[in-house]
Amino acid sequence: MTSRINIARPVSSSYNADPHGFSNSRPSSGYRAANPDDPLEKVRAISKQVEDTIEIYSQPLKPHLPAIGRFLIVVTFYEDALRIMTQWSDQLWYLQTHRHFYWGISHLFLLLNVITMLSASTAVIMKRYTEFAVVGLLSVVIIQGFGYGLIFDLNFFLRNLSVIGGLVMVFSETMINKRSVFAGLPSVSETDRKKYFLLAGRVLLIFLFLGFIIQGKWSIGRVFVSLFGLAACIMVAVGFKAKWSAIFLVIVLSIFNVFVNNWWSVHSAHPQRDFLKYDFFQTLSIVGGLILLVNIGPGGLSVDEKKKTY
Image (cartoon, rainbow, N blue to C red):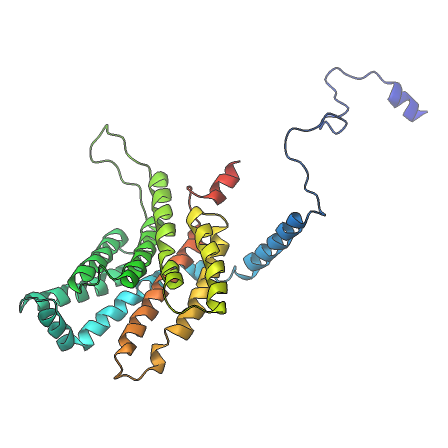
């Protein structure tokens, strides 16, 4: 009898028996539920499980990623400064004989490079005056390109574009909002500036791998790695699954670096040793830039960020 009384009770005008609209039979114009039997949905489900697993097990490493990335980015500058100091007479001979530097100018050129690289690299690691340090290291990259006559060497050019990309990632990570010097003039906010720098850093970072694709002897393994690497580079550039693509490139470049740029296996008197050593530490620098990308994300100008909006 109680249930009959409750059913017969008059319904208030403000009461809605189906507040969530579950009984609405009209077709929805919004999101359509995914078909679990669709092969694409199965791939997405597996991909999501892999991402969640990596996310869980990488948690202890995450707090240390910025420091690791910064150190790897500047390690090539430390190595370059050490090489100049240990090969001082050879460096002077090359600049004066082949680059026609005057005596004294060559000394000053090398000294300024060493001081800038050591001080700016240390500042980047310690996160002190980072913006000035990045500008100093960028200047070193450009000045050395002209000073050593390597600016038109394709391999040097592509590698240094990627190194610049790593420095841009450092710059965007530590970017601060500064007031405009001229009151009343429009200024770009920190968020806007950061997303543009992150876009530039992402695009520049992939040039090393593009150099790997277009140079060297071809083999089946090289074609396989190049295709997957090129796909990952495109995904990094457009910011689609950028973190996971960057992780893939970090793994591939690290393996490539150990087996191809193995300078420690070459005799110290062999001239190829210095070239391999230079390539090894530059690749480490680019790996550091990709690690920073993994840590801070692709930024606002990316497919990943737009997917959050829509």
